[in-house]
Image (cartoon, rainbow, N blue to C red):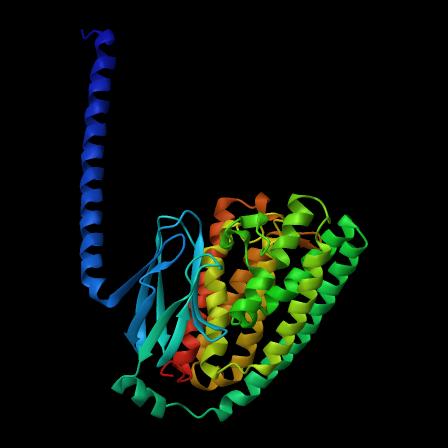
Length: 396
């Protein structure tokens, strides 16, 4: 008869042996994955341009690339989250926000010939330069532009939408200013959400204006002294005071400047045409920032009103989708179905998080729900990216 007291050591030895096998297998898989990733990096090394953001500058700070599609890998070697932008004058051409310290993100840019500026981390850092040289292919693309008359209607209607929402933004900031001037913290907190939502509806268009958008919407991370930096203004400075410090002290000057900035923003939105090939891309880019970064709660870190902003972003994206419907129904009916399906899926995710007349505070939203929101935003952005190709705009 076997001795029962001998069984546990045998079971223990079996368990240890099994663990060793699992560890060896995991090690093999890790080695294989590392090798594959290394080979992929080698394969794409020649087609990627690496830009490293240091605390005070970019390296390199001057770039020259041929026109067309270029892949930039932005490496954050500073000690805080940063953004990298390509600017055409005051207008943002491409950007990547909230790049984590020690990590990198990729920007795939389709650039026309010309001279551009690049931002390098902190807003106070000197800008770099990017020269894009013409190629035979870019010249051929310029000659192959599709007829623009079909886009006059959608662009005009979107301009009307920007005017209406711009007026709502001004009214919302006026109400916020009135409450802060009166020293009424509760009223100011209540006025913050609708004013912020009005901005988020037009954020894709507003974010084209680099300096103005920084004054209105930049987070504290992008300033050297963060929340204590004198240059930190706009919505997030008000949010910090109202919700983190629970005070209106010192906010009067901030909100009066915001009044002036949003008034200027509306003027700029109406005075600066949006090219047909940028109408959809600015909306898609806005949703991708949500999917890649803003879903983590960093955007409204003091008020936790992120869901209000996401819903406003969706409303703005929905307006562009509706404007594109008549054109797409003639050329890409299946894409219309996909767009509407993805829009409804994103809305359903948001609706599940409704509480009363608004949305749940974002610090009460679990990781799985946040990831589901990010996934829905990405799916909608992916389908939006198909519009330009369907309408012949991707060659511009």
